Length: 288
View 1 (spheres, rainbow, N blue to C red):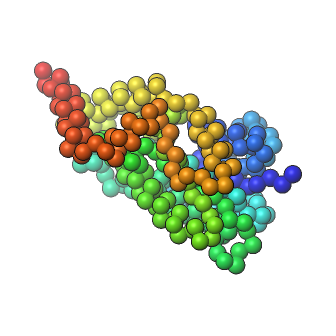
View 2 (view 1 turned 30 degrees about the vertical axis):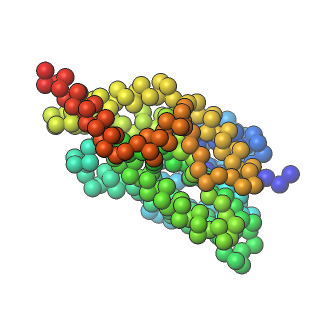
View 3 (view 1 turned 60 degrees about the vertical axis):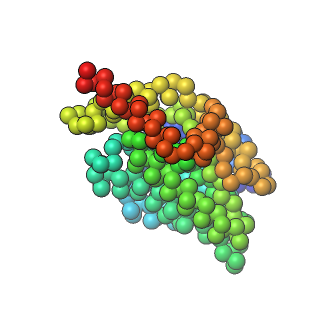
């Protein structure tokens, strides 16, 4: 049997780890990225067949620029059937108190690295009229935050909006080579992304946003309790990879209709008023 090569970024935990397990069991040959070799070895024990890992630090320029060559060596130039850009972090906080360095780090991980990694692997995925590789597929793991702007989650929302735009452009430019690009837009999923990204202590103590940030943390905790299982993403990705003509986007929430209404149909000023009243209530409780 000929195993198709799949590259997945960020496989230590959450969606990436589940994707590795699901796709290897389905008969794909998976190369996953980790920052720590111990994480890679641990995953290799859980998936002894058809899995390899490479080290990749999205904040390290040399690591990112050398990634394409690593994959070329791993695949022995057989080519890549599917690239799944999954790695990412989530940062929050009021934009007026955010430093340039913090926003740049968010964009570097969630946006610029996707651009660099995609371009590095496109020659192995059938990009170009004189290529010997079959056209492949790119799956970008976006978020509902890429279509809906939540106050105090600005860095994350901005990075995912940028990813959505870049994905549309890539899809239209690469279609001439037969390469497909699909966006997955999960809502709350049971993964440790917020646990790893949001500080345990409030970084905005003694500022005008202290109480609002505390309330936001409580909302994130509540949404995580009602989050969808990570398997719903891996099952969807497997179906998408096996489709001849997949959709361009797949929204994954408990109620897609409500999310589509909030993001596309509700007037901006209505949503502004909802957030204003909510934050005003929080501030009013503190002042009283």
